[in-house]
Length: 321
Ligand SMILES: *[C@@H]1O[C@H](CO)[C@@H](O)[C@H](O)[C@H]1NC(C)=O
Ligand SMILES: *[C@@H]1O[C@H](CO)[C@@H](O)[C@H](O)[C@H]1NC(C)=O
Image (cartoon, rainbow, N blue to C red):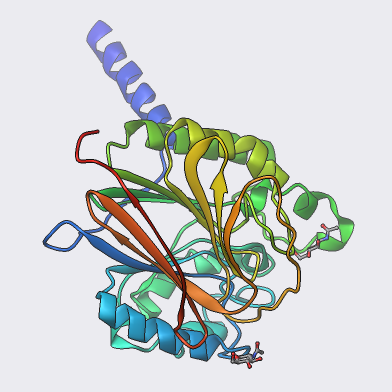
């Protein structure tokens, strides 16, 4: 009897730990241990607003770099996400646009606020993975790629105004509401994942800005709830979309860089409003970002709609750590 009880307690403790844990995926790096990645956001407009031109350049850079996977920072389908798993927009704005062979790799994807205005569950449904096997979209998850751990965070539920504005009653909060519990669990899962991560590089991806000089401004909910956790756990990069521009912002009290790659289609927000943190690069236009990681170096580049390199940046880490 005592033994049975003990087993039950252990099982319950395990279940509780699992509940807080984010789903984990394994991604193999190249044979030499390195990784090449592209990141793009705010894109799905049936090829319009230069989406197709950005896609073409991603294909070219993707081939040169032999990319291992692509990150989508959300707002995948405008204006209101998908209507369901059979929405033609999936083919018209994704499968039929990113056609280069080099982009035939996993697309690790988060949801943006516009995705939540449609059928959010459709985008995370495994059915879409059967339609296009590249599509890997979940609300929050971890991709373990040996030298780097990537933490994908569902940022839309953080933003209070999406819950409170009566005009904004169209958000698909199925599986999310109530907000407080959802966010508490998500942050618990993030913290547990960051604590157990032994990867050399820790990279967090979300749709919303933390620091930005663009139109939407910083997201105060993330500045308050997520940013301190990223700094405390030595996260190297936070990659987001939401602002339709490209930018790199440093942090005055940590090595963290906030990178916006939200130039997948409609751009030219016309706003440049730097905050307290230093803006190291800003491009008010379409484009995308690449990232190359080795055990000792992270190197990133931003490209415009014509594939021109606008900015590069690198950080090295010694082999001792
Ligand atoms: C598309 O890119 C071209 C070349 O940079 C630019 O002239 C044009 O304004 C862009 N179109 C849109 C809709 O942003
Ligand atoms: C309503 O949602 C739209 C689109 O997400 C956003 O631009 C707007 O700021 C929201 N309005 C308010 C008051 O939250």
